[in-house]
Length: 502
Length: 138
Image (cartoon, rainbow over all chains, first blue to last red; front, side):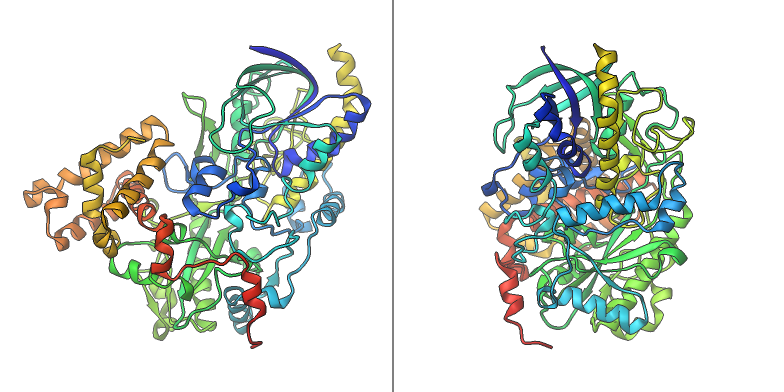
């Protein structure tokens, strides 16, 4: 076991950890030692191969198929230098004021989150795509929504040098997504932050991180030799994501007694719907996610987004098997896709736990509101497909594999509320949130409004686990804004923490 | 490598055409690629999950003996479909989830192979924007 000392240890290098690393990097010029520990590898450019299964194994925990306890849902989150910012599509929305009000965190004001969010919109080159860069899959979605009178908006995206390879979720082969792997982490390292990859943190003891560096099978070698490490630190920032962070704190004596730890987990449970056109369309060509529809967010609790997935992901997202399934899959160039996301409520029993092996376990109950939202979203999506000219639609909860265009007036009958069957319908999530929620009351929250764990002045959280409720939008910009606040608090507290530690 | 036994590989290949009809036409090397992908995915999962999957395959293979007198992979296609549909819609969520897991792995074995792209008209270009820019404006 090697013993080390650092001023600040950051655990995680995604939207939260990468932001904190860059914001605290100037401290290195003052002689402070700042470490960022990442459990995944640092992939080299040639290792972004765009091959679906291979990249899923390299970039995601459990290849993107992390299962909830009852196996009714999979959750996708990254484990790589840059975290989930390597595998998102770069959609860069700022959180609405109404959502921050619903969060109801004393000391957290929307204008502060917005100001910090806008800083990252600039830093990450966020902009709208030109119309010429938008493919048919996206344009048809916008046309369908507009024909139905649904509000539809273009996603701002954090791209630079995008060539439209369409494989954002497999890691951009051209490095065109301006996530922390491309922007914040390289800058932090230039200033002296040490990023240690392949480094698994087992637990946090009193101002000490216990970690193991493992030899990697892909990626550049870790900055540290394989082996076990104990790292003493004046401040520790946990940014392992909404599953990793609660699980780590549950394994750690300093925070494990907080009753809300791991609870109030939300994740925007999602489904994929597919519409088939009678002609080829541009769908896997170009950026996959240009538009979203929040028309039903307030009234029915769901969002619609464009998406375009890869063959295996598409195949598993359809319900059923055999001839119809194969017929749908036989012409990928004719498929239009919509991702529906439910805005799920924070329930104390939806929680991250740790199993006997110390690994995270997510218990998630689909309440009636979420089931209702998912089915309502399927109906709305089916209407959008037909309004856009699709010949037939596959809705995962429908009574039949295909809904033909001539049946479009019977969508509500064909997609019944009891059609959503857990364990049969493929439900996935890519927005894990909560588990270390902010708040003033230690009975119902884990940290204060600045990410400091209640009662532990040297321990902070800086990722989506801070969210007291779901973000109701794609969350990464909000994660960066909150991480920016946490970094500010750590910087301010560091002199005191250093004195006390000495 | 080496989570799946030869018997399990043969079982997966035997029922794969019920999920993807074209899987019946896989040649020897394609069949190996199919089962290797599944094997590799399982190898990365916890040992308890690997064991559960092995148990599930046994249950699915042998449970039809009670009704049909033969294991699943020895049944005619229509009976295989009936058994698989029963598992898909089983009253117990654990059985449905188990079937979902098996289905997912078989679909991965087939559609996760890079070689499947041309078969299903999936040929993503390196520079998609160049193609978009060459479109005739609508």
